[in-house]
Length: 637
Ligand SMILES: Nc1ncnc2c1ncn2[C@@H]1O[C@H](COP(=O)(O)OP(=O)(O)OP(=O)(O)O)[C@@H](O)[C@H]1O
Image (cartoon, rainbow, N blue to C red; front, side):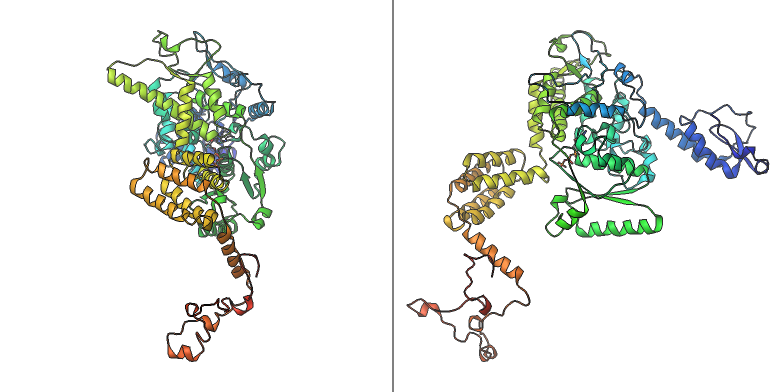
């Protein structure tokens, strides 16, 4: 197809002529930019079409160098997105086309299938190391993972969602700072090691097996869950009820109409990821996407964003999407109240089923170039004597993947990070061993077993998010177990928090509160117990202080309970809050009268000093209008 240009216009052709650096055609200078836009689209790889005639010396104007840079970038990023050698699996699935979501439907449907009978293998047909040759099998069950996202092709794009104009730079390797925590580093490492990840982190097949050391380097730095976060709906696994083909949200997303949404669901099921996908999508349509997290944002931050959004709308007709993560962390006055709920569409995401978890894990395993060891053909890959560098060097037992998927309990973050820790631990210990023994360890084979995975999972739980959902869920479970007088469950939740790295002083502070809220005067020594436990933790720290907390927790679980004081105090608070008009004055007889003037005004007049009376004193202590109110008995006043 030819690029038409203004060169056909006899009048324009008389104006100053320049040469297109892509297709080499001559044209009036005034039209070079619009021509380049079309020309680059038609020649994204920057291959120059045969020019009508060779350019004369000095004919290429200097001012055209920027479009040249753009052309180079485009070709570089498209090169990144192409697997060097498509595997049989990929070519059989026809996943090469951008924006093709055919594979997605396919993978989603498999989650809606009835649960796999127990004992059945859950792993879809991914590359599996068979007895002698590590073959790759193509299969329709593989998630549609190879589709590349134009422009937004980097895990870091989430943080940069506000800057659509930087899209192009994302694909430009120069822009990435070096460093382990820098997603660009990951991307570069992945690209250098093998075409495992596309620029978007999307899965690619490997043209060669990765060495253990390469995999280790790829896994260092950011959590694997972050690195694997999908950019497109094609890579978004499961949740077909919320975003499946026939759903309202899907059609809204496709037409780029985004209503106010609340994404609701258990941890690690893909809420933030879905927002991330919406962000990527909106960037393509020049919609601003601003993110805040309720864990650190203030109401003023939200107001600022809204103000800015209004300006953008009125001055530039540009829409803004504000994404607030962890919205339930807003304090009471900021919180999602009924009014907000009634203006939002609530999208409920479900806990990911085991099958979806397997697919997510397999996507990561495949991306890392790790090979599945088929337990139905048990061979010891470590004893294999071949030194061929084309053979895979890191294996994982298929049952290890199943176990990981099962134990992650629908939380993809836990699963992916557990996998990362298992592989890293195994590879690092191998490296240490090699160092100690002074032996050359390459090429060698490493097997990740079910036990490694269990340990990895334990470690990933230990790194549980102390500021996140788990923190609040566990402390709530501890509180309720003690209230329910279950010492065993109380100890369980305590240990789960402490082993997970929770701050012991945080737990101790909650115990101080519990002592008064739930035990109160039923056992007045509970409060000093809690305060002592707090101080003890402060003195000796973890791990010694764990037993102090355990003692206190069991004491509290066994203690008699009383919420009498707590409830009565709440009644008083409610009374004050509900009071209409100015609060009643303090009765004169109860007022102190340190000065003569106050005495003259009647302060303290008629007050009966109780110790002077041997009999009970008949005296009013509440304001006149509350006379007779008993906050221990009644809620309202
Ligand atoms: N449906 C999904 N498809 C593919 N990957 C997923 C999906 N859900 C989660 N993941 C993976 O798990 C990681 C964590 O998911 P995400 O941050 O979206 O969880 P979340 O629901 O927001 O959890 P939380 O409530 O704890 O913040 C993602 O970075 C991604 O790698």
